[in-house]
Length: 195
Picture (spheres, rainbow, N blue to C red):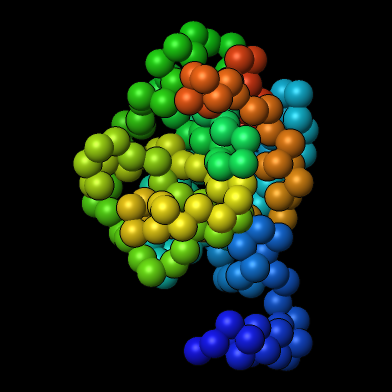
């Protein structure tokens, strides 16, 4: 399907259904569940992410469980690279006020997940699961892409897309590019909930 025809079909679908489009990814807000992140620090605001259980059911289930248990509360955005992405979700080593020197190396008490790669593309506003060298090592950490990042396609599990608050994502404190985006005095998730 050509891009022009796809755009017409999408626009017609929105006109008929009244669905809201994601700010970043251009995809409609689906049935959810939605992950709601209340952000604090130098940046304040709310980010709403439409999770994609039809694309990544195991990853969605894990995020819902972690958010529901309060595990994401007070977790920092430890790695933020201007023009690329903002990463958070290290519930083991990434708590605000703690020693964040190991942030990005931790996970949760839940098991690592097998990859759920899809044909979706990492366009602005997409949310992917961070992982180690093994494709099957995603656990609790996730990232939001600030700009299109097609080089990530098929390498990381896409788990959702931002449907509101992309301006908050853009404002999250950036890290040191010389230190792979490591953030000093980072912004953080004050509270995460599922709606």
